Image 1 (cartoon, protein in one colour):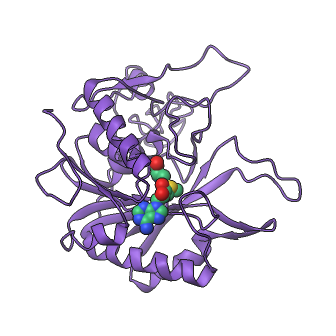
Image 2 (cartoon, rainbow, N blue to C red; image 1 turned 45 degrees about the vertical axis):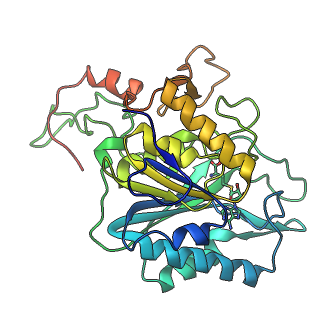
Image 3 (cartoon, protein in one colour; image 1 turned 180 degrees about the vertical axis):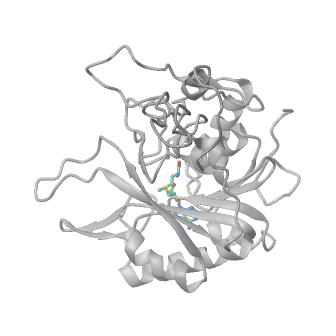
Length: 318
Ligand SMILES: C[S@@+](CC[C@H](N)C(=O)[O-])C[C@H]1O[C@@H](n2cnc3c(N)ncnc32)[C@H](O)[C@@H]1O
């Protein structure tokens, strides 16, 4: 890959647009049906440094305006992944996916999965159970959509398990390419000791976005994140030869996003690799080290590929 072309206004000849300002202004400059995937984590209306806490109806009206534009710019085989947690007020929670779902449904989108992203660390609650998951609502624009399951399979629990009776007796019972990752994903969130930690208080882990990019887009497709923060969506897209468009209102996050992309370009950005298991204190030595990525060099899924060597392909289940 040559030098990554980053622009600050929408430009179809760029590899990435990083717009510093309100996402609605950027969205209005993108042509209809241009992007294959929208992945984002919007503000949760919690009064963080980058947001003003709004009345819930006002918040939902603001989200609707952004979602409407995202639907307009989405290709017919495209997907929208809206990653949210809870709005919390006086220890009472409102799960944002529940209140946002009607917006997407009213725009004719089809919900394919409600993915539960489970992680081990977060605030310790004292008046309720500590929250340890958030969700990703995955919608498609139509019933004919891109989904490459083989690109994101994970190792089978018992890879050598065989049928013990019937016409397939002796053949492997699971798909030798690995199994479907399911709709509950255990991926560490980016806290202080995470290798990807930046100045942002709630950035995506790259591996979470890689799984969505690899399964829902093809090479050279465009991935849009209207609330891009420190550019994680762009890093994951560029790593796999996709192009990215994002908006962010906080100048320091835009700057950080650019720095991460330049580091990745030089082969100096460290990320937690996909397929690395969650740290287990009982087996501290079983750990895959951080991966140093270089744009244009597609990373290997080490664990999955090494297990392949043990199998012979007999046919697929899915
Ligand atoms: C939950 S964070 C997203 C973090 C991002 N996923 C990452 O990996 O860094 C939401 C981001 O949206 C930005 N933001 C809030 N309102 C915005 C708006 N109207 N337009 C663009 N960005 C906005 C915030 O500054 C914040 O960085």
